[in-house]
Length: 226
Ligand code: DX5
Ligand code: ZN
Image 1 (tube, rainbow, N blue to C red):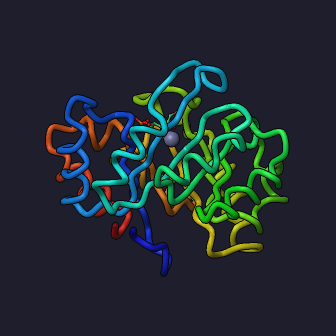
Image 2: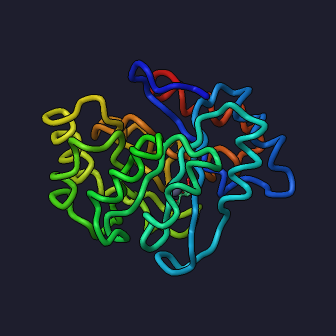
Image 3: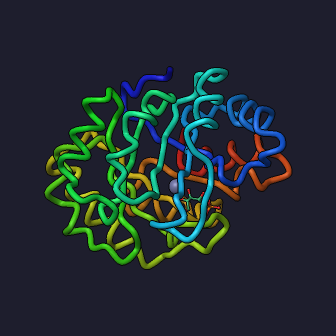
């Protein structure tokens, strides 16, 4: 597994946009391009109006790849599944603040499982709601689309929230990542980076490209490194 050691800018291709008939070659393509993280979107049809992939797929990927598995749980009451996702290979487990009955308990459970812990905010959730948890987490994910589907338009109006979260991170926990997710591509990544993000989820713009390697490399180039 790739260890998060020194802080570097991360581009995490989102598997949701991959061709599921051809998962292995798609994952190999982003690995060859230099991706160190793979973003894995889990949806339950309740927290979001869509159903995606889950534990068995994660476990298969984990058995054949060393890429860091960045698991984004868009499910209600995610504490129920923390241990199962960790066992299946999750390196980072990110839960939505809006989906947890008890956020602190959920973060604690993730850490006890041995995974890194992330919290995510839907577009309507204010930055202030996250402030009290910043010290306790390894990553804060600001959604830049409504969660549930890939291929949506980047919400530029989330940038003030990204800037606020960047301030909290600098103040309380500079080692934490600030991730943005949704609509990230060559026309939007720079703006998110300038607002303070340092981990970028890219689905359609990477897996939807005819040349995956080139698309990934282009994003990396725009934000500096990979
Ligand atoms: C949306 C997911 C995203 C999605 C992003 O609910 O959390 O990770 O895959 O896809 P793009 O990059 O296509 O907006
Ligand atoms: Zn996601």
